Length: 51
Image: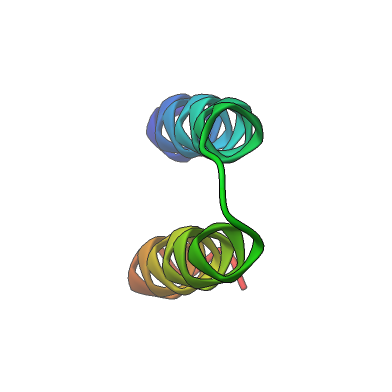
């Protein structure tokens, strides 16, 4: 059950990250932010042994 709470938290962070990307202007900056959000999400999921 504890992993589910972490997963929901990570999902919320991902949604907030996507929302922020849409608000930020500049295509290259959006790409950089999107890559950072994806890397952090992947790292967190690997740390929790979900992936």
